[in-house]
Image (cartoon, rainbow, N blue to C red; front, side, top):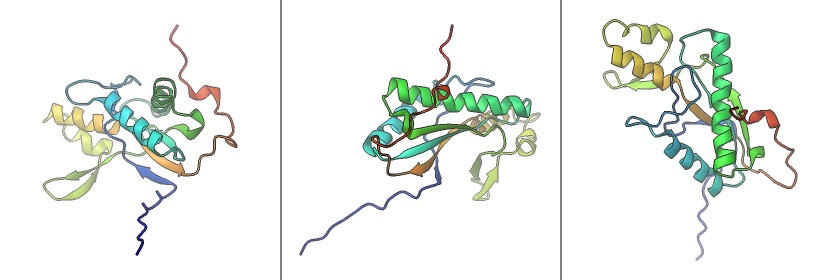
Length: 175
């Protein structure tokens, strides 16, 4: 008797949580400190893309709710481009498999509240209740919103037929 075991194909258009890819306040510089190692996380994303060469992702980057909404949208796009640039230039991922997308502050993260075992959306209103009483929690909750996620947009990338990647997806080189 022969038994064939196959892994299920990932669902297209499914948002997946990346390991901790976080950013400094008002910046697209990755956080790499005792709390978060963004480069380790990005390397895991690159390993996933290497293991599954047909996988195509949107890189969805977010901001916290502080600051101007329009500036936050631009900031989030630069964060997505920072992930894209790292994966393409440092890890050799085919740029045609990735699309950077800035979401601004429009989609707050959701976390599980240990006390109630239910999801909490990290809206500005929710986070601001800790501003006066627990500054550390206030900052940590904002940090959770400054993130990048992946959205599976395809599982059958073909390098022979894929269109070229737009050049403006890369972050400009510092002068």
